[in-house]
Image (cartoon, rainbow, N blue to C red; front, side, top):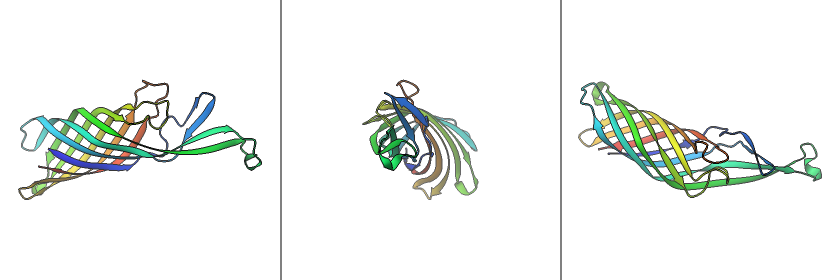
Length: 192
C-alpha cells in the first residue's frame, strides 16, 4: 500500500483560454492549485529481479482544486475603463471532492543501494462539489496522470517515495465547455 501526498500549481492557462457563454466572454489567466491524498494498492506484479511491472488501483479520498481566477468581460460605460470598454469582475473558486484511479500501471527498476526508480501511469475520475472552473462545466471530470518517482528504503520499515506528477483533468467534452486543468505536482509518499 502506497500513501502519497501530491500537490502543486497548475499551468498558467487552462484550456480554453477564451470562450463565449450567454453573450459574455470568459477568460482564464491565473494558475489553479491541485492538492490530493492518494492511496494505491498493487493487485498484480511480475517477478522480475531488476525490473518489474505492476497493475494498481488508487483512490483519492481528498482532492481540492482552486486558486484560478475567472474574468467576466461585460460592456463598460464608466469613465475609468474608456481604453478597453470592458469591465473585469474577478471570482475565485475552490472545489473539494474524491477521485478513483481504476487503471494504473507502474514499472519499477532497481537502483544501487536498494533504491528504486518507478514510472506510473493512471486513468480515472474525480467527483467535485462544484463544476470547475466554470459553472457550465461538470462536477465529474476524468483524470490522467504520469509520475516518475524515486524510492529510498528505510531499513525494514518500507520505502519513502518522491516524484513529480503530470496531472490532467477535464470532462472530455461531456458538457458545453471543456476547460481542462493541467498541473505539475510534487509527490511524497510512503510504501509499506
